[in-house]
Length: 315
Image (tube, rainbow, N blue to C red; front, side, top):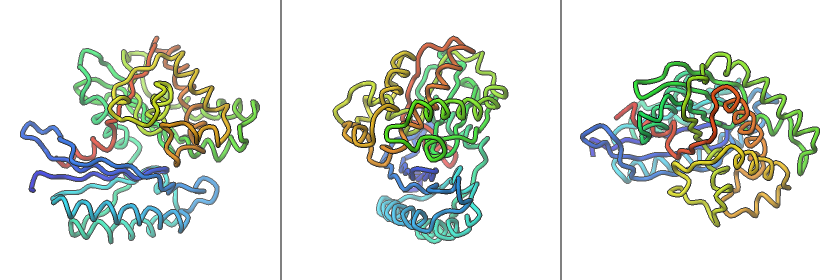
């Protein structure tokens, strides 16, 4: 089908796929949506290189994604790679692998390293697509494994964006070795998050925002746990709303749990068990700053994010 597109988002922690049909009005109709934890950014913060076993985990997932693309008749594909590959000395090993796999769908297709600025803009386009323009201006936060993007804008587009060098994998590896983390470790993690997010808040005028939209796995997991879902349910998570007191409470709860206690939670993806505490710390710092600067009182959690923005960019 000439109007069927595929988007792949390869981040520090996960690789995700969206296959969608492009409607006559330019909007998307989902055909298939999937996420796998591959931890491509394993150890990058410490070593500066992608681990061979991490590249292989990613290759296995991507090979299965491209098989599905061929089966479903995808005509166009775009794959973006973010923080982990931007930082890696051996990133060409990753790109050669991706080129080989994507070429089985569309000859010459390659993975792209996108800038933090473009990452932010794609996330924004995907996140606000179903929200009323009257809810704007918006601040969209994409809390990933290696970086966190803050984007400010309205239905006319992005007005400011910044990619902060902090994410749930990075902060966990650097600050939260305990099981559960000690109070001193959590305090240090909060200081680290505040320090890394300070420039983002200086560069992005969140003071004008009316609605905070959170995207990506940390945000959706926090929502699923706060909603006390017996298992993960994307339909219930999508566009759910958490008051900031509720967000802080669930964040404190997750940070204080042991690995096994987090793993036992029904909606918890196994690949997020060891990094959700770090993500929760970052979310708390974001909540405190947005409440102080913009009077924000709740978080809207969207399942639609950079993946949808990537698909829209080739639709």
